[in-house]
Image: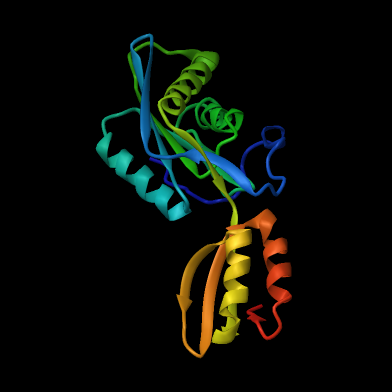
Length: 219
């Protein structure tokens, strides 16, 4: 079975419309889900997974190829990154464009990212034809997405600051008002704090911190 997991963009340009844009939030799924579709005795088992790296994807694809070794095809598509620029569709032996592309189409139509959908096909003895295959893989992927919880995540940025202890009250005032998350902190004569905040709010946080005389921000 084909295990080529390159991040090279092999999808036609027409499927890329609407991707990207630099927003500081994105949609993904909270946990694995599954669905099933049957057409003319062919069974299509669909599995959706939240993923963050190509290594995650490779491991999951290999796991399903081994688990469903007796299946005719194990096809998949994935999308990574909040800008939705890293993606791939794999037909795994099905006619070109009849499996991976409709799976990816469902990911796109739901505006999802950081997601992998695998569809396992057990052949039922009756050929479905090009349009039948496209519809079956599309429907199977849609079933897996329908069973998933779709959640919105924010794109966050980090900032590390250093300051003397006497500036603590001023720093904490900014933290309380702008509400970044405190990732780590050390308190001594010289203090350090690492903060995280939604990307669109980072300019405000930085501006407020820069007004504190004596505070240093790591570049």
